[in-house]
Image 1 (cartoon, helix red, strand yellow):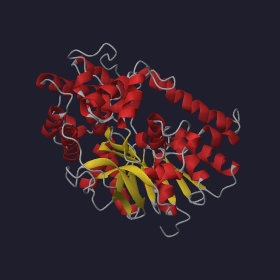
Image 2 (cartoon, rainbow, N blue to C red):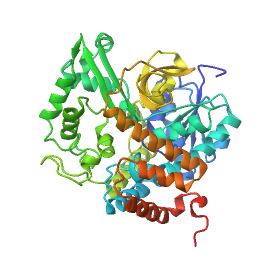
Image 3 (cartoon, rainbow, N blue to C red):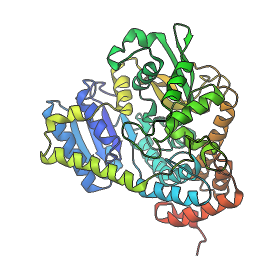
Image 4 (cartoon, one colour):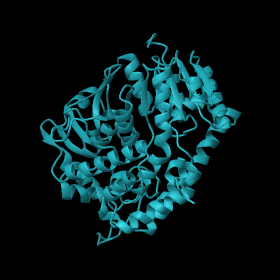
Amino acid sequence: MTDAQRPKVVVVGSGSLFFGRQAIWQMTQSSHLNRGTLALVDKDPQRMEKMGRLAEMVAADNGVALQVEVASDWKEALPGADFVVLSFAADTVRYRGLDCEISEKYGVRMCSGDTIGPGGIFRAMRELPLIMECVRDVQRLCPDAWVINYINPSAVNGMAIARYAPAVKSFALCDSLHMPRVKIRYALQAGLIADESEWNAELDADFDLRIAGVNHFTWLLKAEFGGRDLQPRIAERLRESADYDGIDGDNSAKALHNDAISWQLYDIYGCVPACVSHTKEYLRFYQGHGLLPADIPPLSIWETETRYARHDAMWRQVDEFISGARPIGDYMTALGPDHATDIIENMVGGLGGAYYINTCNRGAVNNMSDDAFLELLCDIDMDGPRPRPVGAMPRGLRGMQELVLDTHELTAEAIVKADYSLLRRALMTDPLTNSVAAADAILRELLAAERAALPDHWFAGAA
């Protein structure tokens, strides 16, 4: 950056309600960012203008000098960028619904459908070509900028940028392991604290929590305090609450039966899954092909209409702030920090924080390859992420990690090279695939159903 106190952050896909609103909050709240520039890019002009207007109102209400730019083409916004956050998706609610519905016909059940299984592969097929196009423009227009991928499947997209655009500075994120929230959650479960207000720097330093794995397939590999192993206590708390369905009123497929599944997986592997709402989708056990305990039914699949309703509610909130139906002064209490902008603040301000980032392993997990693309706790500054040592991935979990990594690697390579044989191999490698014929049928049906969202080369020679 030419001026460390005036960073330019470009958000490509600012209409992404799960990031755009929080980015406005953090860029306004942070003294390290709020004299910089927030450039909001969205190809939908109505969404672009709404988010731009909202950002201007929030900045003005808080009396900060944040400059707000809007653009419908990222090429207009990229010059001068220090950070480029990728957070877009093509009609993702509808297409994830199609991914899940068609796959279920052939025995593959997905509660999220955005990372593993046919859903993960097809989401990458829809988003990765545009990601690579944007990355090429970053290399040309702002070569010193950090590209932060925030689009699922985060590991596929992140490794594709790292492998096929190595000159670009990049890493990938997921908000599942947002620090310090994730560490506080386990401190509560372990009984170290009774309330979040009790959390402090001394507890943080003494609580040795180590989480690692492929994005959405991460596990607690260590949880110690004062030399005492806390995983058994964390697991016991999960067992005690295993009859509870849903999280904070969320009864979606991603939230159901998570404590019961977490306890069962701990009982098998000796490690608690750190992102079970996704991790359960990676495992063949919950696909309905065999017997399960009475309290763990087969996975329910992604609910398209419910997710549309959630998006509508978030847009109503935006409209209420813009129209004045809700005071703009409420914005800073209604929203909160975001993982990506927390990390940007940390990098710009040199704050010395550590965050979970998807990047190359580089020896952190000492029995996996250096280039394994994993979600790891990293120290990070303007020179990029540096993973902290983790130790070994337990046998069994390591084998499943490698299978997921191979699936992701094949998916990225197939999409970048536009190679159908590699695409088919990726789905045949995927841990949820249980039939060659079913996998081929899923490929055929999803290609036909999603043709409008996919590059033409997948249909070369089609009638």
